[in-house]
Length: 307
Image 1: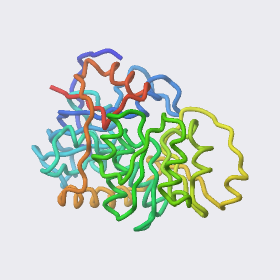
Image 2: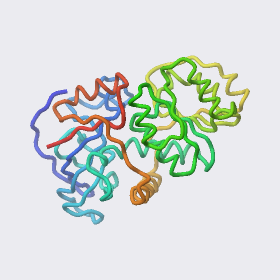
Image 3: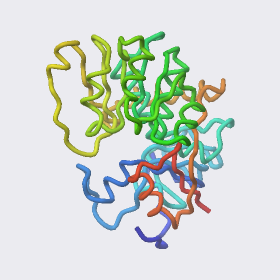
Image 4: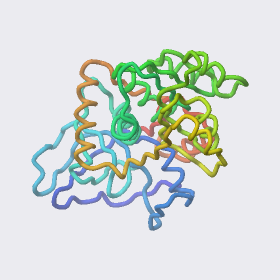
């Protein structure tokens, strides 16, 4: 990735030009950049889907926003690692005054993915126990906060002391170090050996077999992250009649996105939704941000600050 000057994009009908002050860095950005993702953009391209800033210009037919409105975005037509981004109006959302631009850049893909997983696909219920496997990154933190706000008992894992503190700050009732031997036994003990009703999995190629062992009878496992193949024993699913459900944000309908965005606004109002920003980088340091995501160093959302 290299920094270049390019023309500021112009808006078309139904589009909005956003002046960005922060861009979120997601694992999927690294997959697309490395060419390992199903979608391979035409080169050169600008990475990034998430960002936050203010409305600069609105195109014909846009009545929901005006110049100067604080907003966050979850998909752009030209990429979010930039000072300006053009978006379809339905990909632009009002940023609550309780949240900073850096926090706004942490909202889009992670929170929408976590919401889709928990409520649209896994249908979580109050008083259920959820285990967020790898909870210190953007989607993990979002899932912990959303599940806690919905009345679930929330267990989480992280791979470092700093990550564990992030997951605790997000609201998890108990947190485990998934790099320690025997941590799965501790998760089971925390559920009185019944297993978790719901598991949200951020690295299925490493953890899915273990998830099948610690999920409760009739439990559900939602896969939101994966970086390769894994061999599993399907009998583990049969014995418990458990389910493994794949989750992809781009499969969500606009009405599902709109419902999630309204919920986020309410939770930001009452303080239940507080995106946790980990390290911040300058736009020129985007390659380092990608390296840290790949190495699993995330402690909260990684954000590019844009001047």
